[in-house]
Length: 109
Length: 192
Image (cartoon, rainbow over all chains, first blue to last red; front, side, top):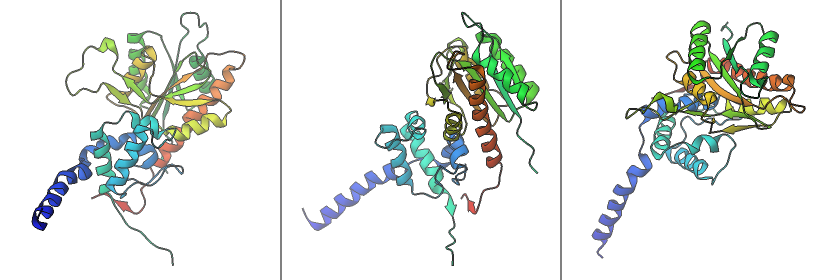
């Protein structure tokens, strides 16, 4: 295989795999996040001291964690039950919403 | 100062061999102890219970609704979802087959356990009047901000009414705390 053919194959593979990583509708996700808001906030800022802030977290990380809760690879008393009822589309939409949130950081002096 | 959230607590009337329904008994006890709490005892009938809940929601306009019922299990069971009741007929395409409660699940489980009572989260509200009422609460036109269904054990030697009421009260308090936190402004974060 020539270098150009190899490059074309690589780019083609990227084109196929990219939508799987970046899928999800943040507008739908915001609506679905009603079920998350009490612990994580609709804005991703946790309202519960035992829940993490998830606003601005990477899409892939959020998607992976929700999938892991659903499959049982990662367990949590509440999240495992909640994720059990989520479809792939729900997971992508929720991940799209929370990853779309911008946040700022202030490092202490 | 933000006004305190308005809370509605429901339990059920006696049915079958349950001469005392623990959910109704706990609701009565908590109502007597907390004058600001609106409590209602619902009949154990699919249609009548739904109508009674509608009336309670219209009269009270609660921010928080904790619906409770009896389940013969030595544990409090916090229900996450309600499936569409069979008697509501076939759903149209796009209609939800299940609706999900909104509640501070983890905080509520911790609060119940702090009273000494075992508790767990459940995805199956049981397909009886309890689930019908839960569905009705979740599909209400003026749905409260926080709605959940809590199954409680029957009254018995290990489960006096006061123990059940303490656990139900703790579950309610977790939501009251969360409702106040949720109404507080977010920190330095903004959506696109």
